[in-house]
Length: 193
Image (cartoon, rainbow, N blue to C red; front, side):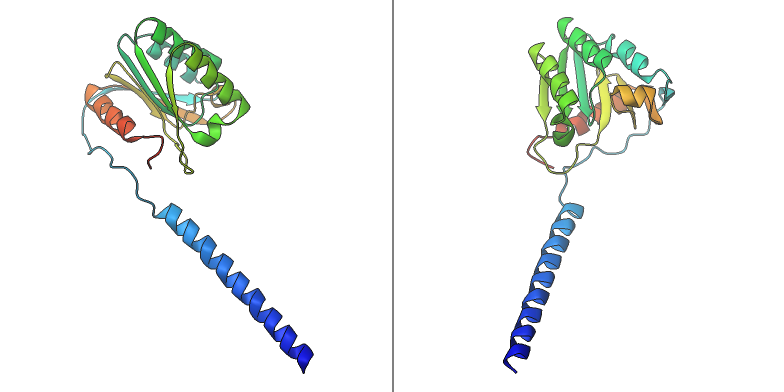
């Protein structure tokens, strides 16, 4: 009889632990799924020049280098993966030409060895790099050059994106859309969702 009471108590304790951890886990997942996010800019309908590129080996990286070569005043980048040496060099070159270059990067990706090295290289050259402090991803992959051109798509600014992965990059010559992307870029803050 005593043994069955001990077994019963153990079973109850196990179920309490299971229910506790299940509730805690589901609360955590719900808070991630339903977390408040920053505002987003309103929809803009516009007629723009558009160029679509596809990888692997589709010329996305070289198109971005050429685009960054047009920067005279500003470059706004929000990026998940940034490890492509030619793109980092193009950002540094834009900074050297006098453009204000500011990069916002993902926390998890920026902790990796390759991206950490590229961020250090950018910072050493005077480029401002803000790394997200959020647990959720900064999964954007866009750059706005001179408040006119936008480069966006699934294309991370990495060697793998250019040479191995199936990716897309859309380049728009469209000041109206560029303003929208700059507004979204402004909403991305290191400590805010």
